[in-house]
Length: 422
Image 1: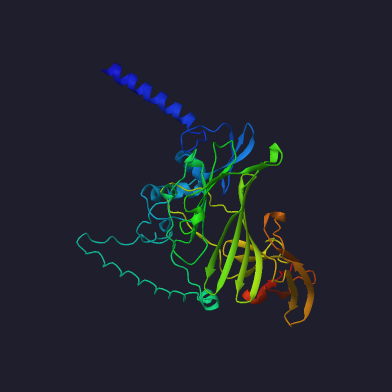
Image 2: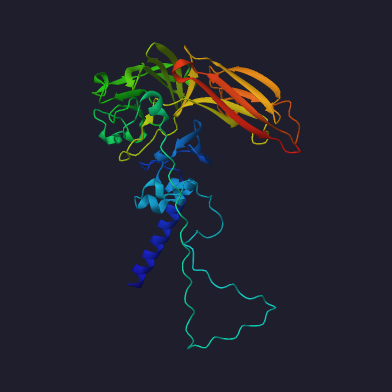
């Protein structure tokens, strides 16, 4: 009996050591090991030096063990994920793991210890009852919810219904080669709950591009049966792009009609979406481009897909291009999650000026908003640098653009305050 127990212990130790070496391998969700060395964890996924060069593997494609070792958000929320709790109950920005022991539930507060120089407090007799616990503090009053945004309804008479979004496995007619590698995008192109356009991009393996597109739209007869299309390969082997035929459809937004032409390109292991839009309201006509590089492409088969709205009020946004240099600003036109580029019936010129605290114009600039520039990694349609501002001074940067009779003028102000050392 002792010999059996001894052999069992040896076997378990050998198994533990074997698994310990294998546990360091990065693996796909289906258990296949990825050849190469882990370089770093990124927001988009895990970067691995493969025999073919460095590649980023999206987190949903990796095994639970790999994600637990390398993805801080997954490790911090492992309990909530295993219990199937909704995303609202998970930590959105967990801290990176530290050398300290994992955080536990907060313990009850204990009385602070007396300083070493202070005399010892007299012992409390055993029969003396403990003091009554203090009443719990009253919870802070809840802030009133902000009033609903009715600008879309007031401007165009448009009110969106909650979309009846499907899960990937519920989309009819999908014949996928590997459903664990499929990319999805869903758009709500009209106000109705079923005005949804589903795109699914299929690939044969991780080494191949996503070269087959499925289109499903329950309210559009052309796409109600989920037609598929094999994309056309273009470019050299080291920079191959897959181009798909445009997806066209029309819709009505309250008092306004819209005609869409959606173009999809798979390039540099990214999905690039471009929408050409013609809108009409009465006698007024306008055209613009919507551009998007979505990052939420992968999802589990049982997770409801989140729809993006194709139409919304345009917004002129401003952002800092360099946290170390407050003088540099970037401007973008957005419509929901998309970048907006004006075309016909809209002014492409963005007028920018810097005003002193006394209202004096320090400098001006006119920029075209006809492309999205990714120079420096931060997207911007126009860039502006305040030159005539001294350290310790402040100014207001004002930007305006006229988007025509349908959407009207947009205006944005940004306050800049320079430190003394700037």
